[in-house]
Length: 170
Ligand SMILES: Cc1cc2nc3c(=O)[nH]c(=O)nc-3n(C[C@H](O)[C@H](O)[C@H](O)COP(=O)(O)O)c2cc1C
Image (cartoon, rainbow, N blue to C red; front, top):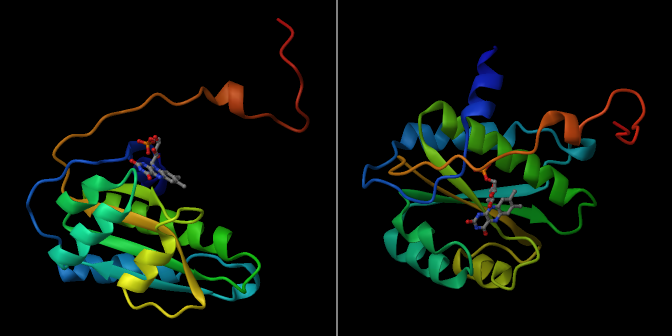
């Protein structure tokens, strides 16, 4: 198995973190991996935030519906996309996954927290003083894992096909 596949296969969402801090170098590398993600027409229509200030993280956490664990993370990344760019959502999701896999390589736990389509997208943007042309796509809670659960995944046979899809008859 190659390194990329090993990292991808071992990743699961983590919502419970130790108090250990995350080095600035790791944060920098994560942002580097974000900016190198593929984008439609190479527009790179995004802005990436790394929030480590505890008071800000608590405020973000309180704004979310299913991201209250952000408060206990060491860092919360925020991915914003330029609303005018047609494929900003796809582009920002690609960047989000790049960041998650980068962090997995450091043994860090992450959980993708929804931003796009959420009522708190605009309040989070304002809180972080991000210009109006951007909209929140995702938040990534990150820290060293305290607990890791392994949710079940659908079997490959059920979710894939080769050449053309055929209904299972057996
Ligand atoms: C677009 C998106 C939004 C998500 N939003 C949340 C969220 O708001 N809160 C949360 O706890 N998990 C969130 N997750 C994480 C999923 O719940 C998780 O990926 C899923 O249960 C599968 O588990 P796994 O990541 O361990 O494979 C989100 C994941 C994605 C891709």
